[in-house]
Image (cartoon, rainbow, N blue to C red):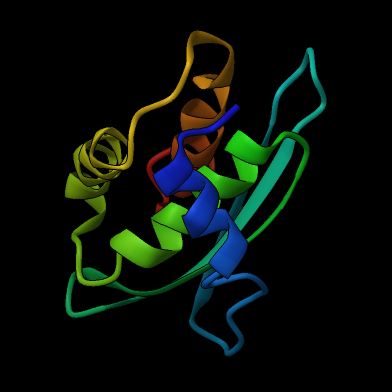
Length: 117
């Protein structure tokens, strides 16, 4: 089960949905064993993530990490986003060993959306 702080992030569901517009980039990832899926859409401006939205299906950790990314990565440069997301996860109580796939999926989707996958 996700930490209490991550559960609260998920309950608020900030950033759920899709970005719209011609300049939107998207990326997705799926876990091959459990079938969890995450899709990110984002807009870059001035070298940073200006907006990030998410859709996810699967375990609460996958949805919570996607929601946390939307909440924490606005204003962050794409190359700094993985470290920023890891720090945000740690600050929100971390993930159990069986939940860490959620971080990996969000990072893969993010890399794809930013063009570095």
